[in-house]
Image (tube, rainbow, N blue to C red; front, side, top):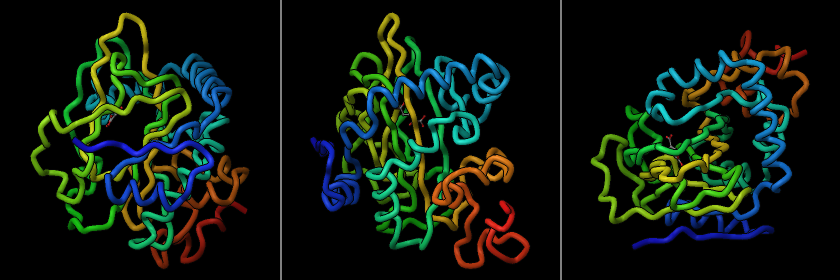
Length: 273
Ligand SMILES: O=C(O)CCC(=O)C(=O)O
């Protein structure tokens, strides 16, 4: 059975990238501080309290129904949650995404930034590849996207820590899933982040606890020539985007990959002035 390499910070970019490219996954311990995680959770709570319709909308969306009735979620966090900007820009995670996606794209995009709460009663999710959204893209050796599951509170075997199948990348998203006996669970402490190639088979675990909600900050990064999961220039319109760091503006799509994504034939950042 394979394993998921783990690294504390400061960690070597080479080791992280090698693990993602070879095993398919890596854990960066302490990617976020406990204070960052608690601030994030408090901001999500406050936002959902003030905007109950948005969480309801997310729960009944195409992604929400895939995630099941015992998961509540909130999408497009950069436009809603103040601490999301700095969390997306976490240097070990973003650096890894940039490097492992570089062979196939000069620029990358934030595909999704989502909060998920997996409640007691959550059933085992089917093993799947996140490349299903782009299943028509021919499969090659290099990853086209990277997924991140960061633990905002501990991920334990009992509350459903993410399962991954090391080495199970490189095929089409429509491949039959591997056997569960090949899967291992990524136990994470608060603030740890699991990074994996989006073409790696994985799935959320069953939450068999009485009251331990599993809190996830999930992100995806992708090559810039594919359409993103979240429509970021709608959810973070120019009026909000203009005050964000330039690096984040670019990840949200205020950027172009050569002639893709142009605004009036030029740099989309011109929409922010
Ligand atoms: O719950 C998890 O840890 C994984 C979630 C996931 O893969 C998904 O919702 O697509």
